[in-house]
Image (cartoon, rainbow, N blue to C red):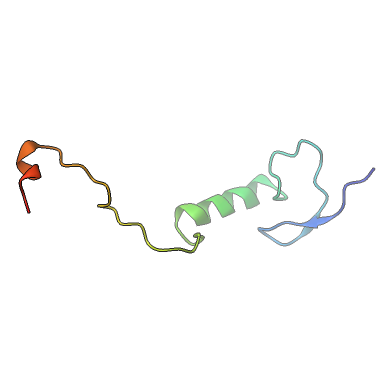
Length: 68
């Protein structure tokens, strides 16, 4: 049975994924790496509230525990 043709989410070109294809759902390693780079540079992001970097931070020294 022939795999159905799909569009690559990176370049939008049609392709037929092969069984055991390492780059799925992308058509190539290039498209996969471009997408990964977009996540690393935060061009892609999951919507939601911004994370507070100080939330849950623990004091590192006893002097910091007494600080207001």
